[in-house]
Image 1 (cartoon, rainbow, N blue to C red):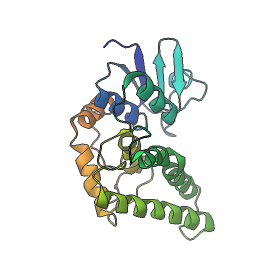
Image 2: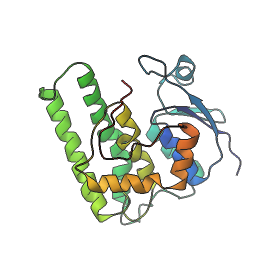
Image 3: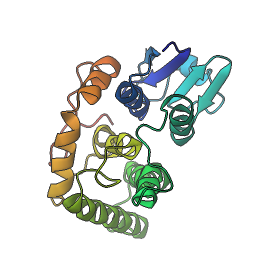
Image 4: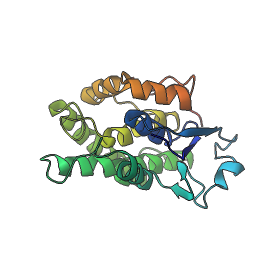
Length: 225
């Protein structure tokens, strides 16, 4: 298969998901990687010029320039996957697949990022906003841990794009907002399983060489902020 697909990957960002997805699907692609600017860790200007959104990830395919993780996943799965890594509406776990595919960026990651900015702004853990946000994050992790106690993957018995979507929020994102997952042993075991996937290893080696995947239970000691 030939492809005109280019992944614009901002290192230490959620665009690692797109690299991983393409590696799982064995889709040929060109990878252009960018480092964050210091001290604020924003994307460099040449990255932000590619698409007006200015956020990671961004892909190009022919004349198409597309941003937004979920939109990119839908595009790649529809155009290149031929049914792989997704479940059809007739599948008994189709609803679970959709839920976890969209849960990561719809609720889980926004909550974690909100908590990050609240803390950076000097809010204490006892402030109302922090407590409400933390409660929602905890509920999400409890549900995810319970799910993974029953099934090897988030959608159920099969590895899907929902897993590619979800792992970043549990690993690399912790460089920005360190948190522990010691209370969620099934999530920890799940991350270890994901880290052994050959496609995940290739994606991380290509996109973020030298970065040890944050699959361990305790909170990272060296945050980027």
